[in-house]
Length: 282
Image 1 (tube, rainbow, N blue to C red):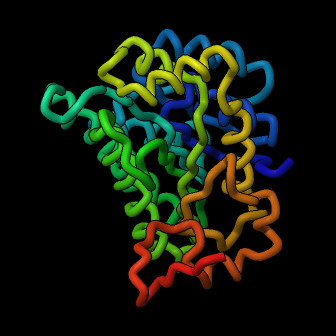
Image 2: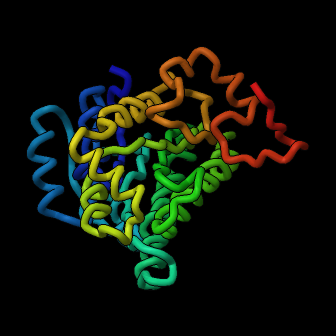
């Protein structure tokens, strides 16, 4: 088992990708704490996964520091250690052009997606630094590496998470802590239904793509969960500060060339400027 006896917090672990990660971690021997705002959904997930291994649930709004402090403290008190943090919790709304969306809803998105991720990292890090090892996995998403009209809050928060991941990785690498981000692909979660419900506000291409994914199926959440297992395990030791696509990147072979990746600009946010990074034609 790749995660035997490791303790993991999964913020947003009650449904969708987070639930798939919780299941995969348990199957690999991890002891898991999931956090979510919906107590009913969280308890349903615990009932489903508990026969497979150790799992607890702690209600938390990750945009509130006191909730995050309680989450980390209760997890440590219950399991006696903390090895892995996965930040998958997030929201997509508001959907629409900047001129038409509710600005407070836009700000709330940043508080949940970005600030929530930052708070979870800040509260978990002292436990990892004390052990001089740890794994942090953040989640990027659509709009992080290319423009996504009508989803400006979500895209901005996810792009910020990537740069935050890269920066934090440099700050904590001397303590043996690896920090990476996952781009999970177009997974059919409740966010898909939000796009469809928003109709024309989503934009023509987004809506058509969403309708097609609903009919034909999207990227399975288990793919991101498999990547999360790799990043949480010792197989990825030393790989840090990277944004990795579950769908497009050859991460199943990363363990063979981690040093080469770290000594390059691969899988990072960067600007093609003809100086530091030069675009070449194939």
